[in-house]
Length: 334
Image (cartoon, rainbow, N blue to C red):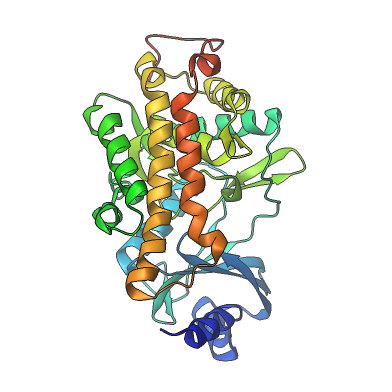
């Protein structure tokens, strides 16, 4: 793919053409009055649709197959059934599946959640997020979710043998080996979001509206999700903010008390989350150099290094400053 093709592809992604809109109208039995580009997330392209049933979000899932997308849809249905606040799935009419095919990729239609993304969360906002995360972790486990974390895929690990940035590759291998999170088996598991960055939650002023983008949801150690939330919301100038992390954990503890076994490994899982995020970004960077799939600008090229700096900050932080003031219950329920 040359630069011109890449540019054409980006422009095409900014709009839904008339045939695509008509297909959506037909399959969902709705009238679309207007469509606008919302942006691209972690492997999806999103559009806002003004329709006769209200404002909706149409998401084209770029990197996952039909079975994966159907599981995403089932997850939204499961969350709705258990009163967890997120966007609601809208099902196609006269069709057995939850998703439709557009541009050769599987896609979902959801209700639009009003609210704004906030990068710098206040203490109150972080405590709300912590409490909402604990509520998510308390939902009964469905039988259709995988116990495999998206970021742990072998294809991402293979990028560490790409020999593009050998300093990074050596560092990541060494830290993953040192953290050895695979040895921690006796930890509470739950439904986890897996991608609790600030841009996957919406606020109305300082009030949390809800989480969005449950594409990477799985069943895994709850403490990993907490660590990812710290990575995604608790940094200042590229470094971990212990104060912010404390507010997030305090909010979590207000709904579900963490076990001592979880607190003991919280720092490791938080650094692990940062390293896995850096690895995913590095893989996308590596894929460009190998296949010319992406055209990284300077910002994209350096994104994985931001997570390296954050991971190093997490490693050097005394996590007792985050957890010491928390109420501990040794025999708390998972």
